[in-house]
Length: 315
Image (cartoon, rainbow, N blue to C red):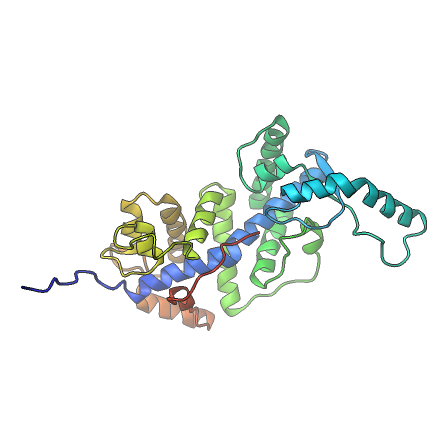
């Protein structure tokens, strides 16, 4: 009896490099930069009185706080007392540490969910906020003043600065010039390109967050058989018979092909990288030239470790 031959062909190292690059950039920089920009837009709209606001005693805003149920219950119970204590402290001159955490102004939850988390608007105020937000997105793309802010927010993300748990992006962007070189310069340029595509709606929040969820290995080896599941074939790195792009395209994984294609566009147009004929990844020679250009390793192979698993980007 003849042994069955294994027809699977290992994915070329250059294709793996491409996938690991996208995983790295999206997880660490694209989602964070875009989130901060949406928060910046909401802050602008609140300042202009175009978004309803609420006062909360804690200066913290994550993906689930301060709108989580337990947080809301706490607020209802203690908000009035907290504000009274803070007001009394101010009347007495506001010397030293305040007796309670300073209250802060936040947008209404429905507006936050609509503009920042891209949920469907549930009220007229959300629809208005969304329309105004679209106008500011255009400014981030076209007007010099806002373009500089847009670029600074991305540079902050590249150097590891920028707190996504606070609603104070206007304060965070203050400071001196940020100069990037080598690998950081490359990461900035490609992140800028991808965030621009998000602002233009050529990429979506769903594209980048879905890609991130699966790239962080939120897939069970036990429950999913890689040979049958296209997402597992790609992100469990089980050496599929076809390349990653074709696997995604044949299975209509648009969130994958959208982000991959956007990255491919940058590498071809801006970095002038040569791609393998009839494939969607660069040649090994082109990758080496890119590394030499930025004098950097540009190595993100940790995404291929069999033990690697990361929490999806929680803002």
